[in-house]
Amino acid sequence: MGSLFEAIEAEEAEVRGRVEQLKAQLAELTERLEAEQERLSRLVITRETAGELLARMSDGSAADETPPTAAAADVSPFAGAERQVVGVLSVPKWQPGMAATVLPRVYQDILEVVDDAPGPVRAKQIVPRIGLPVENGKIEVTRSKLKRLVVRGWLDETTPGLFTPSATRKTHSSNTP
Image (tube, rainbow, N blue to C red; front, side, top):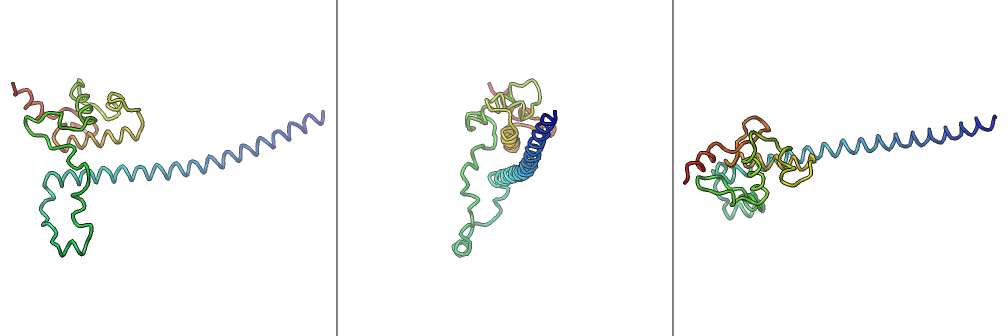
């Protein structure tokens, strides 16, 4: 019988070693996951802030600056670079008579979902309806698009995170024959 207990103890020691090894790997992965989540959070905030600034610039509120002179251009090769960003005007500011067809396709899809909803909707409700997987990254990207549509007058954000068709846009579209 002694050999059975010795075999069990040997197996136990081996399994205990694997458990400790897995715990160490788990701790390392948890640390890496937390670092990546922090980086992702900072990138989302940076993108949203940049989007807001670009939206203000394209609306003309940041256009109070005087254009750089040739001398200033020699000093800073990046002067005016913010105006060269591709896609700044991909979502134009809504104006009476403007159709959703002027928007990029994904924005049209988002607008259609919000317009068809019986009440205010959240980004995570829109994501599956526009054919995206319900993942945090997709929800955050959609939320930033919704906020861009709010800034440009296409949607309203009645409460933080709840989006509805813009009252102004709906009023104008119901008045047109």
